[in-house]
Figure (cartoon, one colour):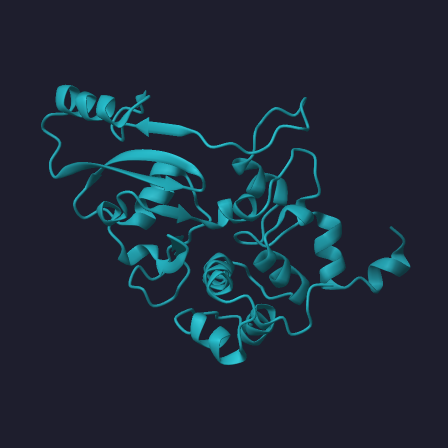
Length: 246
């Protein structure tokens, strides 16, 4: 790249050249989206598939059925206090967890599955950074008990792209993004990136409810979210399609 081009490089062009996407604290698309894909690089025709995992939180043992997990808990961890086995779907895969009565969904997602795109900032439902979709409705995961999610479908920022597209290995990462992610990308609706996953998930919930939201609907959808960078206007513009996806 010439020095002349460097001087005139826009922020959007830099992000495209760097291969970055909206998906957490502005992280690389391969690391962020690749976790939801099939991992066979030799077969570009393979697509993301559903799978089931029943894992013990105490010793990392995994089982084929939830009944086998319950039997393991009773035999190997009979003194585990206030533990219940709950089963729910996360990003297209079904998991069973042994959780405490007080365990929050944000804790299960981050500590149990390593889905750190779900941020935890205030832990009081005041910043919106922990937003996920629960049965396609945007909710603060720091205010939901994991036990309450029995049988529900959870979507986090890591699974948003593959939830909207049939992604093949080797395809364009930008093309694999969901509509709301493309909107944020094209509108530069993010700055430091920490609050971005929460805004995107709130937007995803809004666009599932209405494909053409009004300004007031967009403002209401993100009204419980905090952005210290002050980029709210571009977030609303992205959700209302002001400027559009180019």
